[in-house]
Length: 355
Image (cartoon, rainbow, N blue to C red; front, side):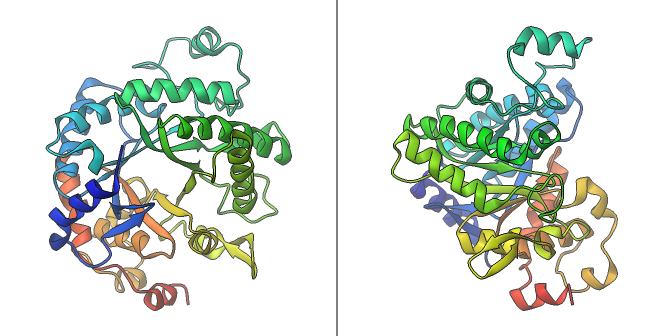
């Protein structure tokens, strides 16, 4: 697992190559503010090899955060992450490895009859559009992720898009499912198989309170604390949220949707003040922002390419620990890592983007 001493040693090897605040605190360690995402790509051996080479290049170039999920590319993304960790010239303890559970993972390729596969493999569980949060299911998925990654401990484990459950259940029921699943994860923490956990979302935290798919971060945190109490842990290991954030999807900064001590706050402001780390997905909008940003925004950001400026926009937002970017080739890695050689916007300059 990632350790304080190892992540600080990693920072000390690389920090002179990057601009200010490239490495940021996560728990008692340090992580790069650019991370590798592994969502995109077909479930093929050729894509596996490209990801493997990109991951090794990233780990050896100053990126020590990797984000995956058991369902990404039919479990292939987790498996290639594990192989890249083994092959890269870095210590396992220097890397923050994050994965997710919730959606049905096919095994290596999409089956001819997905419904039959789900019934045979997971027949006892209730799914909502392929998503399940039942504690026993999450327990099963956690074990499979440990095996895929070939690790003894996962650094950060997310429950994946729990707002999907709101299509079939009341909000209160979804909170109950989350609390039960959190108890499972707290037990994994107690067994030294997990360091931290959180919730990865698409809409839940960035939409208004009145939206059908809204979930409250303060209520989620309350449920995590209750889960820790139930398990007997001295404090909760709920540590992070993941949500999309980019110049075209800035709701996490602009939409006040979470009750804070001084009124309703946006997801990013609430997280910053509550000490919750934020990892942004869709930081370059699955490649679309590589074609260019709005001129007024681009003019405020440093970077040689549009993709670098987009990454630096995400890294500039309050509360953001790391901007995740899909990198399926060493060429992508080189361009994206280089974004970290430019400083992010200061707080006043970032706020001015929205004036």
